[in-house]
Length: 363
Image (cartoon, rainbow, N blue to C red):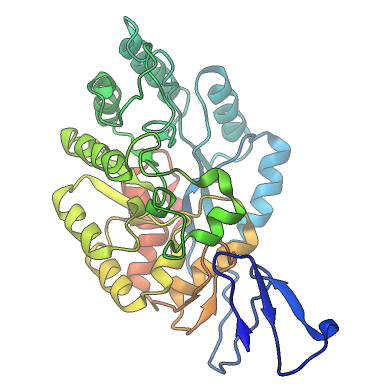
């Protein structure tokens, strides 16, 4: 008999009448047997075409860091890394200065805004002035972290909504400067849902309890996402890159509707490639329809994990695993995208909207 204990991390197996020492107790996280399915498999450790990773995070880009990173980038065929953690002011100037002196073709840096003080007299003017300075010092875009909408508070202690009108001058200035805004709002919706047997992210929440939110912590998921979309629509002259497919990689029909409603919105698939890989037919149709507005993004710098992305995008392989079971316990399938779409996703779309990239490295 096979006894299952609901919401437990351990599995206990019994095979007929056995002695106590024959009972196997195993963590569910560890139970991940290789599939016995025999189908063609193609490991893709290097992208078919040179690519730009628009979603990466590096706290330091000193000379030694740049040398180390380029070695791994070359092995992946990554021509340009976009570092979204540039900060602002002196820190950003130091980072862009190092890139300019040591690897000007290979790295792009985005600035960040400090939301502290929203609501204080002159805050917006100060933030816009700092952003202008950061762009003069080499920033090619603005990255907005998820603290906006979640933990950022104004000068009275109130949550700052993503579409707070006091932030409008920042978004408008990005449009004026012709730099994109890559924004991460909220997190996957299941983080807000009850942590029970019907929650597909239960294992992730069990192993990473700090990711659990609850229904209104600090606001309902739908509210935060709607704030973001209202802000996009309010600033049609600003280009927005919605990180993680806007958390709608699991509902491409709805994302399709949003893409039609918000023509200034691009998407990138950092940390959600597993969602696309489990629906290859629908995902391929989405890529075909929006091939001019999808960018390559990874999020975390783990070079050995990129091959999962390449395999989903480039091959027609069947039933292969994601690299983190707690994040995606299901198997995936390749979309087998044609070369013209791959080139757009890998680099052409990024070249259109991110200034400062040396185009001579491509084709």
